[in-house]
Image 1: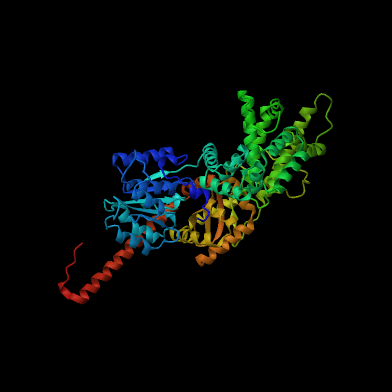
Image 2: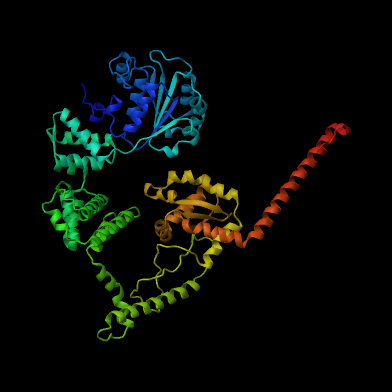
Length: 602
């Protein structure tokens, strides 16, 4: 007999053997016991969490001739046929390859026939979100009112792609990611049954990489057994998964706490060379720093948390503020990873920044301006003089920025526009000469816009039409097919909110992404060209932060209220005039055809 993968060999056959979804399995069992089985179910959740397994068990239980407290007996002829995939009344359909209207119409035509061997005909439609809109529409009425002997079970990993009309006709069950503890417990049980030795550390690595998916965990375990059939070793698990060695990551954390940047960089590079990812290293550092902080706060000395000897003793004397700062910097680096293809750079910047004390950073940012403008401080007044000098330099730089912004030229029509940002309350001093233009740095708090860029938004709103906005929204799905995978995130954070015949205002969901997109002219030009290609018309892009959009629109409505009301009134009058002309034409035509026999009634 051919080899069978572990996730297939150990697929759950009863509700009790499904891991991590007790609330769902108990509900399904009770529904069978009490005879309150709905006509349609929707199982949604991440991959490998038991959706299809629960669907098969539920279908088998509905047709079992010897139920055991809501569980299938797995011994009767119907259960055995269901396990072998030969039960004619249980039909499993892959929507990814059967997503057309014809396939759904065929189902709709066959549901009226009674089951041949069991009590119910059960249709399991896997990855139902892959159905076309026509197929969904063909399924609607049958799904809402199927015959009494039919049960539909829909499964999907992307619930947001399933129409609301389908969801409202089903009982929805949300499957959650399986916890690491449950994953480890299940893998250990399977290895014990297979008489295979294992190391707990190796199982922990597999559970971490699987990210809540039992099928992924068993697939990785299968891969490890192919590599070494006799046992599951920690070193093999690291090599196969490319996961960072936790012991080395603990050493990186110790180097960060001791402000040893060269050693931390060297250890991180070794892990990267072994195949670990920057995200993996940063995630592990955040996890260890958090656990270290909890140990300091709670006094818990659980030595099983860490692998290195005397690790807890080395971290206990570190101030809690150091952990807070390290966790904050690591989360910032993880966020930066989403916006760069150079994945190693955010990690290296984090390691250097985390090993630099805050006092040194402040001194480095203020030392150059103080040397230029501040007089030599007298003894005993060093701190006050330094602060005054830093404040004077900030005032000078802010004045220069205001002058530059006021002289900024207007944009050309064929450019991609963006809303300018307000000057931050505090600007780090730099070495730039006063006569040279100061480069504007992106800021996190974008609260208002300059008058020049507001005119661009107002220009769009003054000439905005529903047809132009619909044109942009209609080409949005087409952009998904032409943009690269790394660029598709652009469509998730941008939303067209207003469009005139020559420009479109797009609000940006995240402030940080807005700052990055504002400086990435190539990406915006590419988006503009694709919109022009599909819409057959050029639209310049005006970017606006999500936090600014409502305020800008409100200001426009308040300042142009009279014009908008007049415009709306004119549109209504034009429509009434057009309708009256059309009615007159109909009356004249009727008189030409029927003469005086025509009687006109309002």
